Image (cartoon, rainbow, N blue to C red; front, side):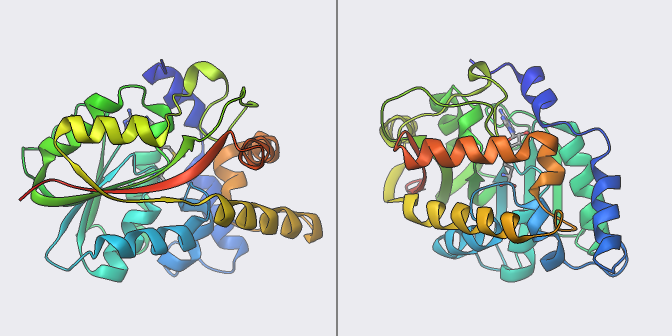
Length: 277
Ligand SMILES: C[S@@+](CC[C@H](N)C(=O)[O-])C[C@H]1O[C@@H](n2cnc3c(N)ncnc32)[C@H](O)[C@@H]1O
């Protein structure tokens, strides 16, 4: 079972905000002029980046009166994108202090501190009141959370009746040992990849009705293939990208993930669930 301190260490960079600022300057911008769109390549830490976020979030039909929870928000890229596109309010929770601090600074850079906030904490035991949120979503987080039943119960608790939950996680779809390191785990003990059936059983036991399921394997392989081609043709790394967040081991982590997906051991899967009204 993943240990919370070890996970935070896995994700901690040390000087992440400074490294992102250096990338922003290489783009020809500054913290005062950078936009939500510019940050997408570095602040969306999941397969498909912002493209995947948009396709996924459109299914939740977010509206301006919605208060939305971003579970395991990381740097908050999806939170800022959602607040800007759907005009809603977003609150994030994430385990890794450096991600929460850096995310707050990025919100200040793009002028979204009034609508996007986040706090450090464990998604299975948050500080939020019962029925605090209209909608919730989770992007590539459940691979670090073994207690999917506890997580589902907590998300059920903080959602209003009639509230929707969207999940876009890497899930176990076939047998075979995974190659490590992976973007979410340096070694097997940090990983808790579950199958779609594990998620659905946990969600249903908490009281959710699962309304949609979609395997995104082909989308992922296409996206990772294009990433590989772009990297092979590029002279040096782009100014902003996940290589900044993942560090020197980024190519091997992404390569292992692609190999595990092409061998049908894991795949990104979307699930939509609803708390009965
Ligand atoms: C691969 S990143 C995804 C971040 C973000 N959702 C995104 O897509 O950009 C996984 C995130 O899950 C967070 N995380 C892992 N376990 C958690 C837990 N128990 N509670 C809250 N956050 C957690 C990590 O700190 C990390 O930010």
